[in-house]
Length: 134
Image (cartoon, rainbow, N blue to C red; front, side):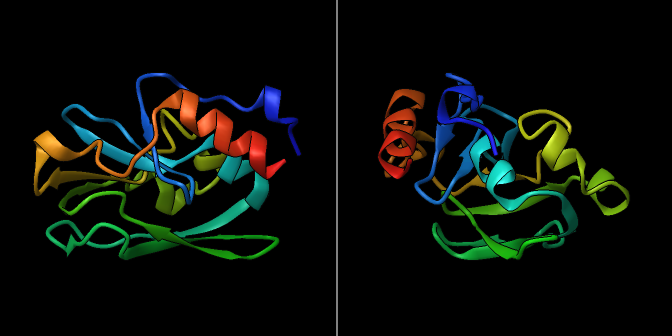
């Protein structure tokens, strides 16, 4: 596992306390943080919803399966899935190798785009959260 100082935390993203990230500009992508993928270990399977599915903030929208465990994924904001990263079906390890790029999970149309920061952490606050976890 990586040391907290070695975890990548891009400043342009917002983070949920359960380690999902949200790109706060279109396309509104959702993924898991470098910390989350590191804790899970080698991801072997990704379960994601179909495009068109709607979820409330905090609702489970899928899961990641690794050698260690199965981890639920929670949508950080209310929204409707507009796209699913189909590349993960054949290569779930993309989440490990590139969690903020090729390893994104879904794209959403947020229910309230002007309020997506509500309840989410900026990069500095997420770093503090990880520091408390270590």
